[in-house]
Image 1 (cartoon, rainbow over the protein chains, first blue to last red):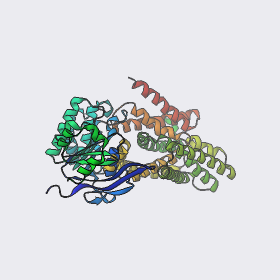
Image 2 (image 1 turned 90 degrees about the vertical axis):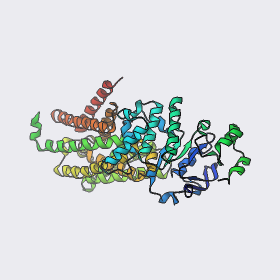
Image 3 (image 1 turned 90 degrees about the horizontal axis):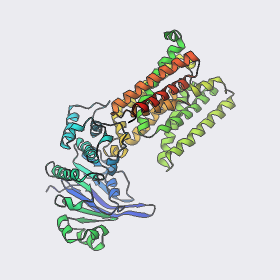
Image 4 (image 1 turned 180 degrees about the vertical axis):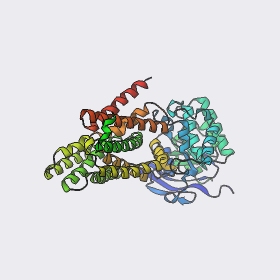
Length: 254
Length: 265
């Protein structure tokens, strides 16, 4: 069974800030080679959940395990490529070419004194090639369009040879044509390279055919194992509202 | 023009000045990109406490300046992370607090004289052979640490959280950066003066950023601007008997204005 050991194992995760519950008792698992979409209303806790998976926030209670290890004991962070929400809003005067940005993906594995070896170089150029930004490599990041910038951010994540790619609404400010290419690319990364993908998005309709499971997060989590069916039979509005009935049905299905 | 090098003190001042130009501009690039610009002002004032302790207590003022600047840098990082204080407020509090402490210490010790004045605005006359050795040793160590971790520091400056999630020791490196900056600032106050060193650290990098080029080129442009300003400033200082820190800062300011005009769209 290829789905044996979960990459992420989240148990009873609760996050309370100043008396306000952001996430409440969330348990879920993310398995190798899965393509997971996360949807939910703004302020529903999607980004918070992702930040906890990455160790950027500490849960009030509950536990996150990654490759079977506690986050604090986990060392192989290069296996995780993270593209944050604000990636498309980088400071336009930051002194970085596309090449500078993508090279950052090799930082934690590369040698000291800014040295990059042949393998680093190859991975960096491969990543740019796959994202179709090789001809932009000497362009300043601040001069790129939203779609190009997004591809640079993902190239950086790919350069570290990740086993899992976590994307937090990377499409903000990207035109429709680039989005379509982008979804095709994610599908390819998932199906051909077996990269696990966790994707916060609003465009659930477009990728429903690609994804394995859908999580709806609004303080609590609804885990939907058959997104196509669910989408066809449930109103999106109902999904976003989360009701206890749905939660009950889908909680123990996988 | 070369006659100024006939004087030993000018040779020492130039060696110290060139080392400081390299250190200030390279570290300054990281400081500016991390939006830490004000930290240099605060640390310079904390270094002044060290100078005061040194002058009054009879210790080497430069060593004391390094010590106090490092303590202050750690205190800033600690206050920032341990309490939810605004970082600019922390910097402002420590800046005035340090200056007040330095003035009191010097006044009580009866050392309020020209010696302190030279630490405020820099003086090419005051650089001793010991100072050059201290600057060279600490300067090499600081530059080494910066270059050793330059990739990591660059990534952190670009996006601290993504750097963290790719396994970079962000907290350690932030501590390292402020410590190195503290050392560099303390070393600089002989030549540039504590009230003016912030400018030499920040302005060359901000000028270089106007050219909108990649990281390595930005560092190199910043380095060239700093070196040119220090050499020109010290030359003016020599021929017109002006405090070196002030002439250096006015030179770097002139280049900054030119870089804005050249790069205006």
